[in-house]
Image (tube, rainbow, N blue to C red; front, side, top):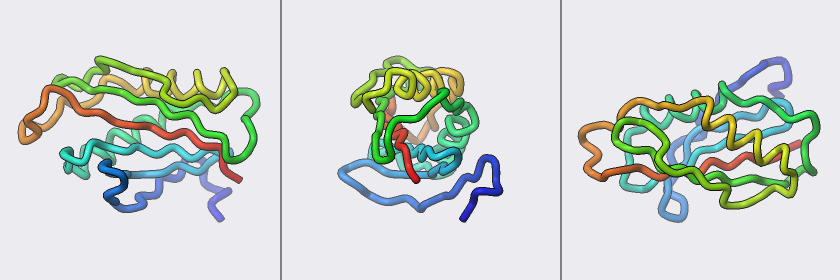
Length: 133
């Protein structure tokens, strides 16, 4: 339904899901990108901005793994908005796709400093890169 748009960003709402918040989704070129935030981090505007920045940095690899395959990259963002830890938590089975997801996040960084109202030393975000129809 959105094939004519190059980089659609759909805010799917903020859902409490397994203790993390989900925001934003990109479905272009057969890839869905979602960010799941620590449940204690409730700044929806910050979440939207961060996910949009990651989506904007996405560069699809030459070929995609099968529909349904997913890479999960976990990042810790420090108070200054920089990545302090980044880990490939789940592989899609395609090294090129996994690396594209990791590089996409690195390219989008640094992010805005964490809001002063968030009192933890870092925030954890799980980025899901999934191949969709």
